Length: 198
Image (tube, rainbow, N blue to C red; front, side, top):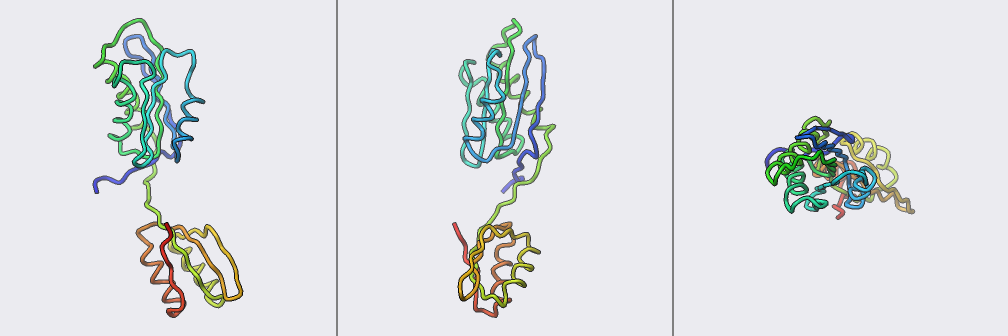
């Protein structure tokens, strides 16, 4: 795989004036399409000439030209997201028309360029692939097991107790999943194992 993908650390904005039209790019981290569309609705300006947007969340993406000629706004915004190696983000570029037509090429450069500059200046965090594991263990090993799994960056998402012991559901970086599985077998002396959850 090439460069690791990044998510936005926080919302950001960037404004440019291009041939008397004002372009405002606003970007935000999102985890779902619903969050992306809610951001577009909340951040868009109904009084503006156009509110064009795109989002990418893994393999899921959408874009909208909001009345600009097809392919001149939403797609260049999406290409800016991809070109900057960003995932789980939405970008809205709002345009207030200034009286000078930009033409198709000018629109592509204005929307894509404003979005790209916004993302280029944004604070980013690397996206870490995560794994989920299920563990059954006896009460005797529970405290040590939880402490050692925490050292690997595991977060306990669920913990249930029964007569024989505990059932844990963990979330941890994918790169450490095999090490966590070996740790469970080691601490429990082979009586327990960590199985992958979907």
